Image 1 (cartoon, rainbow, N blue to C red):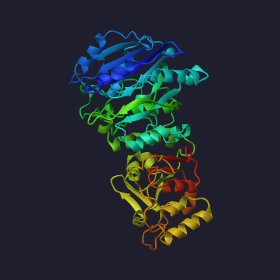
Image 2: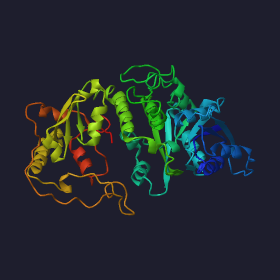
Image 3: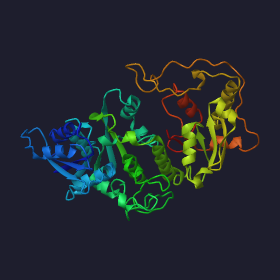
Image 4: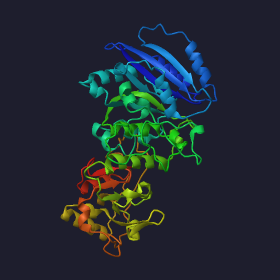
Amino acid sequence: MIEVNIIIPVHNAALTLRDTLDSALHQRRSESHEIIVYVCCYDDASTDASKEILSEFQQKSKSGDKSIIETHLLVASSPDGVSRGAGYARNRAVELRRNAAPSTCFLCMLDSDDIMKPNRVTEQVNYMITAFATEDGRNSALLGSQFTRDPPDASWHYASWANQLSDERLYLERFREVTLIQPTWMISRQRFESLGGYVEAPHPDKLDEVGTVIHAWQGVAPIFRNDSSSSTAPLRLIHPKVDTHKTLRLAEDLRFFYAHLERQGTLHLLRRELVVYKQVQGSSQSSQTSRKLLLQLRTSAFEQLILCKCTEWRNKQFVVWGAGRDGKDFVKMLSDNIRHRVYCFVDVDDKKIEQGYYVNRDIGAKIPIVHFSWLINDPCRRERIQQRWMEGHDTADDGYGRIDKSKPEEGLKNGAEDVVAPPPIKKQRKRSLHALKGDEIDFSLLPDLPVVVCVALYRTNGALERNVASINRTEGKNLWHLV
């Protein structure tokens, strides 16, 4: 018998909860495996009718439909009326089946405003059982699925990107986003427990005098690790300077995702649309999570998993591609003992290059900005691109794209065809490859330095991708994308 626990945190979800519960309680029976389902809901101090709706569903008689998996609904709620956030609520929902056998139990994550397709449990269980030759393989896996968006145009660019990621891109773009969306996750209970569950926000009564976090989870793991320690404690992606009891309520999926990867976890995308991922105005926790917090956490993860561990990066200088908002924020968010390793910025924007430097006195930074072509290790190609740049050529064909966020025409796919018309040719003028006033950097070193790209992929008519390809780095080794 295979047990599946559908984990649903609930907080003020009265408008959507009935549809969510209906979808979870009516999963189709498998012809290949004997499955029993427990829908585990934890109400995190809702102030609307969510708790009453959960009680209503508990009192309903079970379906006699033999095509539906045997399903039980388990409910718990906050004992003191204090909301602790989604991570805390998910952990409490998982605990509702404490006596489940970890080796034969899978956790199926769902949000209280999303809907499961009727065959989700069956298809994901079948994948977990058949795709791995060993139990160790299953217990290292995080499985997601494709999804449909409701309404269809909600975050269209993100949905198109997430649904089309190849197996390789699930790993290569892991520092840009969580590449498997949380409401589609299935993971073994054994794996979940080995990672210590989700990071929780502490109770408001357990804060120190200035309101910062003393511990995310007393005695479980260090608050912040940035070395290659062989400690068996799972990673807790918590920033001692940025996180507070309020921010620890947010981004629980991202924090868990990197804990999974740090423990050599694998990522898998079942290419079926098994979840309706809804956007309900004002109810989404992701809408409360700032861009800067997400970048800060991804930067912290990048430090811990790459900059401090990988041989291509450890104790080495590196280059940041993109001297715009995201590149500068990335540099500011680096730890003090890491930031000095940033050798320079590279960019394609002549105005940024003409500035010569990024100067930030608050963090003691003065970082040169030069043209990206200095990274190219093929002298002939580097010289050709530099010559055209200095002559003032600036067309899409020459690879100097600009960020575009407009939606493509109907029927076009994200990728080579997912573009708009090339930008108009600018008036030619002489330009320089750098505006440095001395010998602050050794240009001969640049073709060998690793690179962090802080410019958005898929938004520049293919220009960024062509430029990055020209510098002959290996993505996932000495080149990573962060935005």
